[in-house]
Image (tube, rainbow, N blue to C red; front, side, top):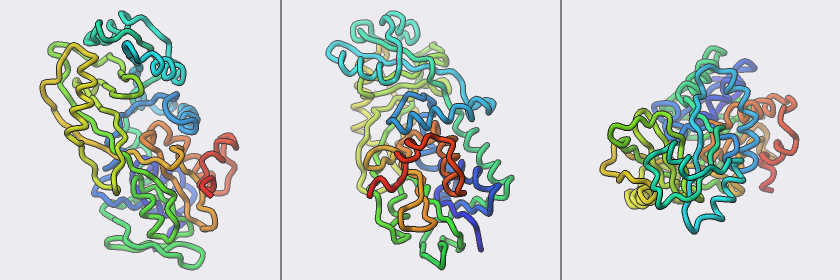
Length: 359
C-alpha cells in the first residue's frame, strides 16, 4: 500500500494533521488502540486558556484562536479563578501576572464559587479568557475533514516495524503494511519508542502522570456557571463538568514507561485534601477517577519539524497536555513544513519548536 504520508498516533495531534494533509496527498493514520484519542487526548481537562503554558504553547494557543472562533460550538465561556491564602502571596502574584489575570476581592471570588472558605481564601484573581473546549466535537470535525479528503484512519493498528526503504519509509502493523515518503511521529507518550523503532535516537521525552477525580456537586447547587479554580502553583484544580466537579492534584509524576495510565490513590487523596482545605464542602465520595500522561520534551516545549539528517521523518510531539488548545496552529505549521510551504507563524516560534534544537 503506497501512501504519501503515514501518521502514527490517533490523538488530536495526529487527527488534526491528517485533516490538513489529506487534500494534498494520500494519508494513512495508524492508531494502536481500538478508538481515536484513547490516551492523553481522551483525558483532557478541555480548557482553552491562551495564556496558560510555556512560551511556545502560549504562542500556538493564541494562533489557534481564529480556528476556534470560526467553528460553531467549539468554545463556551468558563472563566478561570486563582485562589490562595496566607503564605502563598508570592506564588499567587507570579501566577496572576503570568496569566494576565485581574486581582479581585475574596468576597467577589466567593460570589462566583460559594464553597470557597472565607477563613482560608484571602487572595483571588480572575480571567474571562478561559473557555471550555468541546474536545469530542473538535476531534470529530478534524476526523470528518480528513476522511472526506480521502484519508484512511485505522484503529487497532499498533505499529510493529519501521525501516528505511529507498527514499521513504516502510511501516508494518498488526495486519498490514504500507510505504510513504513522509512518516509523522505523533504517538504521544510513545514518540521516543516510535523513533527507536525507526532507528532514530530518542529526544528524551518524559511522560508525566496526572490524576483526576469526578465528585458530586454540592447538594442543591448548580455549578454550571462556576469558573475553573486553581490553587497556588497549580497544587490542585477544580472544574465543573456535566453537573459534577472534576478535581485534580495536578501532579506531574514521572512514569518508567508509557502505558495506559491510572490514578494513584494516595496522590489523588493528597490532592483532594488540598482542595478540601480551600472549600466548605467535604469530599464524601468519588463518582469516577482516572489519569493521563502529559508528555514533555526536555525543555517542555512542543517539537514540530523534520528530524535532522533523517529525510522524511517528522516529529509532532511533546504537547504536554496542551494538545487541544494548540492543535489548529500546530497542525497548520506541521502541514506547511511537510509540504514545503512558508509557515504563517513567526520564524522565531518555528525555530523554537524544531527538533534541531536538541543537537
